[in-house]
Image (cartoon, rainbow, N blue to C red; front, top):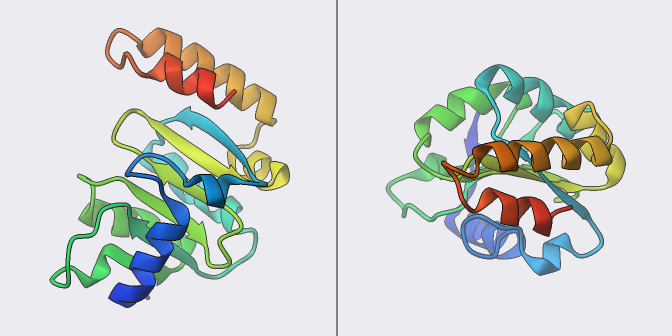
Length: 160
């Protein structure tokens, strides 16, 4: 069952996690590995989020943008299996799925890529590949997609 968190809790989480809408903050990223990967398909999201949870029964789902008090479900604590149902309410927004202890997160952007942050083991478990394989795959993806998304090669370079 999805449980909304308070306005002050979600704003504190956003300040801690994000620099702008499409990046993890430098303070949150410090001491963590952050890698870029191609955008997720719905069929891939639940297994990836479940692996990221690493046994936790609940995760924090939140949009990067504040929608105001009229939208309490923009930040919820919920089971990993609820990610797609929650996501469809905010399909037009960038969002993150975060371990409740903030040790690992995935940030889905509207720009054809996602960022995974955490320790090496968490990222590899979530994606089913080594970090080096993820980086190589994203570099290839960025090169192939650069005609449609010119910024992707820059993203690949930044997170390699």
